Length: 348
Length: 288
Image (cartoon, rainbow over all chains, first blue to last red; front, side, top):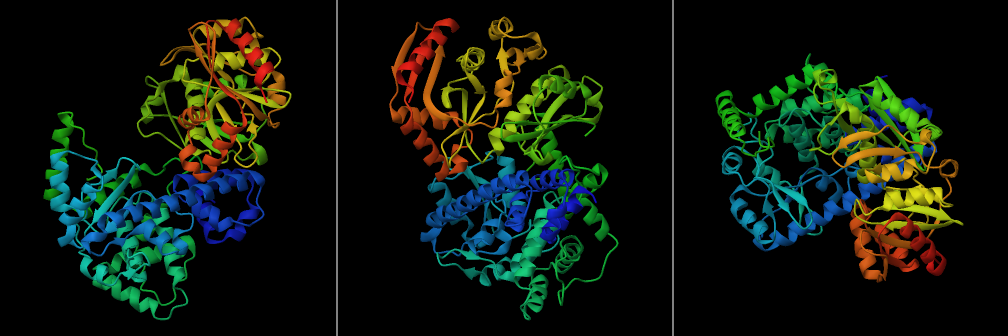
């Protein structure tokens, strides 16, 4: 079995772990690190009889993940304090939402930036409040700012220099240039309040957002982790008879029916996610390409299948922007690159 | 990868893969006598690979990657492949280690008690620990001291000592030639040559030691000793640690425990002979 297949098999069924030999363990641990799944793996395998060397590595991963969890919650609290006087709803997204809501998807999850969603008409006030509370722009480049504000679903990234943490302030969950148009207003209206006043998306919206993030907003880098989020979120509601209908309704509302269906169709064979009653659509030929791309890594942690990766990279631009706009953007970026202007490609 | 080598250094297992045979061959010679990783499973993976496929043959240069990678790291020429592997291993420790508080310090042991020496690069702590390692002390490590947060002991991490510039001749006069790696000229830090620690440092790499004294050596001025207060020591060690912040409360407890437990001094020394004398005198007078 290939190293990535082995990793997903062990994540799906921890009972397969004690039978692994040293070479297989080395592969699984290396791939898990590269895919940012080592913390999730450590949680899944906790308490099993494992070789001491493996246990030590996974214990480290749990320590790291716990530290990351505390740090993510603290960053959310810092944002809450900065924004509380505005009286606008602040919805936590992705990893921070999972740990704040105490979901299985948050166990051991690596969390990078703080992602929040606020109403679009509150964006200027939120921006001003964050700047007043010490956040700073990461990219001072005027083209990048113009680009973000005109076409993206979020403010240009802000960072807090004292804590060295980034915040992405979203007003919707996909770029404005992308073809599907999610209903950000509904997402905020349906969100659930936490004790501290911050909010998280409804259970169905969390899955829809994860699917949108996976298939409509990038080249599937880190996709195995995003798909793991989806598996955990689906299982969280596996016993709830109402949930499949709620998920289907949410996918429809946000114009993301095919994305959610594909996420479920991939999650089932990769993570053995239970699918009863869920809107999985009909199997597509391209599903296999997606699966192959998600699993494209070797036991040394190196990316494999360069042609497939490139194809998905090109696709990521194609689906986020109409061709003419994309050409103009790449031309501007190219010209600025020629002039030696520093400008990362995070926006593109 | 096509060429690979695995090794255990104290409690840490490494696996190094390379697109070229030369760095791996150099590692096998330098690490002669080291054990393999526990259970056959390394804690960290390091990869030496070309930046672009054709750079494997054309002006070959090794990019250092692995479990933990610095995004803006520059590749090294293949002739410095051994150095690249060593840097890769250091990087994994600095960015990935969570079991211990990592102090950028050299460390030697006598009678089960450890002497830690911390300081900026070029302060001479590597040379000093290498010399002490040949003069009745056991070398625990010249780069990182691994402080155990639970027990407060120092775990040995006896990597080959990275000798730089003048230190190379000093140590070449002291040890058998087969313990020295190849001379690597023209690195960003000048000439580098690695020294395999003495046999007992390898044989006893699973035997921890209790910290007894902390020194902050500085090369250049005339011999001098200045006792350091707990606060200054604490702050300097937070700066000398690569994972103090990520360990959170456990890191704070480990470091305050160390600082409260052992005497700390800044020492100046004009030459290595004077430094050795100074260390021996202070050890006899103050080490707890």
